[in-house]
Image (cartoon, rainbow, N blue to C red):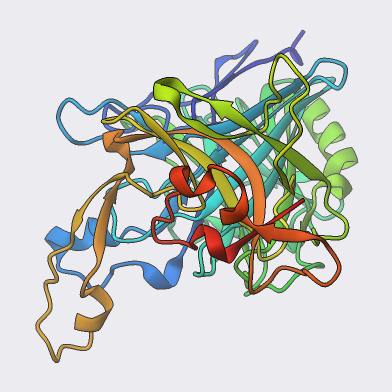
Length: 440
């Protein structure tokens, strides 16, 4: 059946393989970024932090893109580093698989990623894969856009169509990604596009991407949502890039929902199904509050070397009571609470800073005092999470900074008051345990 498919989900939560009757749809991989770029994934950027003002040799350290997949590995003897997956869940009845990962700036950088990417992949049958993202930015810097990025192998799908507002489609095969003519606003389409083997043959194999047509109705935006496409014309990458770009006015510490669909089959069936799904593709900021968000109980858990840290896992034996509760979802203004392992010592600790104890080094400021850019780069740190000095074990939930917690409505105590926390909490560059509130 041309609607049957199989996908491969990578170690960062990205889709690195889509197979069906046409063979493998995803392009071949490059040695320094295996399953990093040539994959379907959520990307975003802290555009105002990009180091375009740095000298060319230091410019990579100003990278401010964030990839769901992971970090490029150009250094010798460094294995691929995929974004740490912090939790997974599967639901056989709903045919769904969900995970949350900490997105990575794809190179060693002076900038920090505060992006948590929740994604649910759900098989709706008839060749339809629903992809739902929730993105939470817990850094003080605003994101510029939300951009699911991916594409197909050009040699398998050499042609491309984009839908019209009336549901029909037209030939649309730009030669180069980023060149003139490769971008089109959602409102000028019918809400979907498709890569196909032959745009003139309705029975040729195709993969449709349903992105919707009215995704700027909710939240604040910086321009119109658009679809970008461009291919390599059978170059070495053999890659036709497809990306949706939703430029938002992000308020940090606000969760965002984004849903899209893949449709697999023959071009005529892809068009038919895509037109039915367009209105279900959505974007909106979410409003999780302390009042409407469920709580998760945390228990003491003993790790090696006699350590006891917090865990979502209740003790296997006995009836130990929980010691505190945290929020299950990213409440506006909240910080994620992690369990991290420090590999050199084998010690586990809890923190709201995923960079706590990771490999780092001082950044050499290329500018002299008095230069307008000097202050921007003075005292900065280069972060190298891919050196694996730490492992990210678990996302416990979300906690409120003391200054933002609604302690008048809800009983809460400082995290530092929980027995044993003082010995196992490391603030990194975030809040101290005395400035974080948890529920009783």
